[in-house]
Image 1: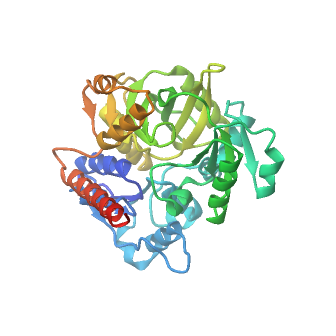
Image 2 (image 1 turned 60 degrees about the horizontal axis):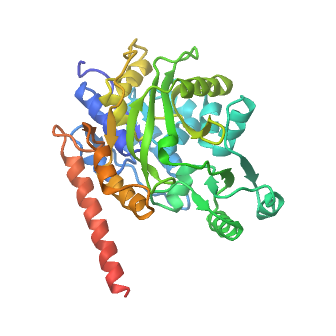
Image 3 (image 1 turned 120 degrees about the vertical axis):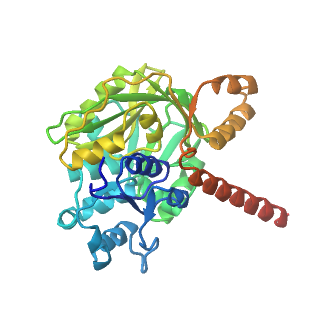
Length: 401
């Protein structure tokens, strides 16, 4: 690919942004970033843009990013392809789309559908209206609603923020929700999130392990046609049953494709779609967990499977025809080593996974999300960051005794 192609600007993200930068960078596209994880900025393919990470007077990051992109400092970037690699990035583009289109190239989008998929309650309500199975869920607009639903609730129960990126901003960590096991825990969890200014909903926790999770990834063009199909399963999350995925494997799950396309057709979603389901062993049905209208954290596995999704989306935005393979290898794996080790320790303490079983599960060729011999600095930077954080926690713990 010639170097004359327009640059790409990535808005937010971590391992997904790194995967995009490596894909497009290797294809000769200059990649700029705003608001990505610090280790991503160490990639040889990345040029960070000098956009403030924090705003004054409570201004939201999405507004800060859009204002900078539309200001005089970014005039030299006119004509660039802007891609959302985080929920904040989706919000920035959706809320400022007409102005951004005056300077940049953006992906095809149904803004209302994208914003609905960001809002977990709107996603579940759309799924219910479209005949897509979901766990039991309850709308909670106030503390009084807890009392109203009290006799209907089932435990364990998820107190789920409607907007994941706002929860992550207020409670940085590895979980995306609060898991409660009784009425007292529910009241405490709700109050903590409500006091932080977060809107939440209540969702039934489907019983079973992380291996019951699966997902479908596709790209929906302007006519509503999927350009490819890709499904995978979860092996483990950290922490188990409530954290982020740390071990994934490609597979063929036709049912998840059918339900995902049913949701996409009902909502009118365009562009990227990554839709996650869980198998409910009580009735054998797949039930919706969430829909992300952007590149997911497991993107490195998609690319390693021979589906260069970043290049596909980039060229589609430019109006160029680009086809992805119709097949991909099943059983290909993506491993977050440190997180998976922590998941193993938690599962072993719970008596659910032995050391031998864990080792045997790893006896496969692995794809790693950060390490690359062609671009090693992000892995070193992330390792140093984690070591420093671990040392700080250890020292703080010792001093607190």
